[in-house]
Image (cartoon, rainbow, N blue to C red; front, side, top):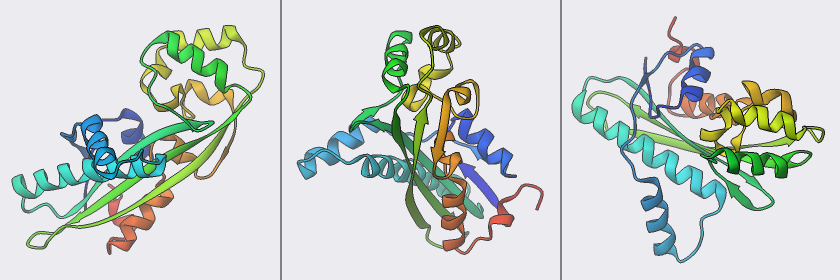
Length: 215
């Protein structure tokens, strides 16, 4: 059973590999801001976080699935797409990109709890058949240690790790020491909920062990 990850996220790739899956990867060709803007304009409202991440996860997976179906009609497997965002007090905290923004984020987050929303989309591609898709959103609340010092924040930001991740933190690397509790599937905070992926894959008629590279 072949698996393609519709993402170039190192964290998502490592997560799947740790779960026994060594997927091929393909970057989705989607303009995220344009997609969200178009949908919000058409509906005349702002998307809720769970709608936002599911919309992008589905568009990413659909783009890669359609390209694979066209270029590799013999592909027999699944395409996995995802998107995540962190919400604190109703505010969406995306990737900070700059040290200044990351530092400010951490000073706001310490001692508090936010929610990580993760959208998932899985396409089942079978030679000679139309693609079939299943999707879901997983959520996990993250509580940050209240005693994180300014010096620790500065040192963490200086590593560059929090600059390109949603919410400016990781749970599976250096940032994990500053997180006191995760309520929900911990892998959700890494980038994808493995339990959610298993459920989606099974709903498409694929056994989860069949996705393992060693199987």
